[in-house]
Image (tube, rainbow, N blue to C red):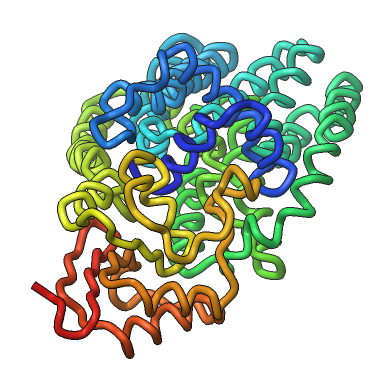
Length: 432
């Protein structure tokens, strides 16, 4: 479980009133998802806590089950679209193509909202083709309230159904009913998305590869033109627009538009279904080798930025009764918040108000002078740090933590865990 999943786990375990207070301050864009997961954990009898008070096997199962189910539903939706536009054989190939895509598999096994958003957009696409406009509006709005960047699917649908009066009314209704969430989340954008930078060359390269493959497949005379009009805009427009806007105001992360991969899956699946001879089987066999390796790698801790249970286990091994804990930077408090029994046994030197009391994700910290005063009095400190080489936060609180540890303490030990370092400091001469 990595830190984004840990946020889901600890927020969804808060009382409903506390969740509502949090959403008024931050993370409103994920509000509906947190409420859904709150219900899931209630149905799962508390989410299956482990021996340290954090997620056990049952808790992780419940955390990820909605994403697994949503990915199955999205693959079925891709198949339904292909079946309507190109027949049964195209449906089988397209649904399978979507399911095996590595990014789809990645978010199928992650406790965040992106797989659910993709399922909503895919089934909204199907309902658009059936001209079921009330159902279309309801399903797409559900996707938008799970993550508001699902609204970019309207651009793709507009290319397909722009002459339909039903689509225009539905699109207007979706936008109007999304405005309350957009207004709240716009006020939270600075703290919500302040960590984002502009798309890098890897982002542009990935988009370029997907776009080139999609355009190449779309040129095939074997593909029904109506399917191309559905799939190509879905593949190109949502990520392309978000990346273009991000050149001015960074907003782009690939998972925010995961649903766009339904487009290339439809194109590739329908093309394979139309192919005859030995080459389609050879191509599929060749692709299954790297896809299979990637699929296995995605199911290891190395596929994520960090490993929250491993960090908590490492702290549990090194901490002694009465030890203080310090997070550098403060947002890494998330590593222990999903292990409340362990976190509660340590004295958090910099904490002013808990996450629940401050209606925040990681709590608020004391002024700089108070952090320094508490820190210099501590006999022994367990510090949780980012991996070596990561940029250091320039904020005064973070600077005083680093400077005080360096000037008033001896470094007793430092151990690396996936995506983190666990450093033990003691007053001079007191390291074992």
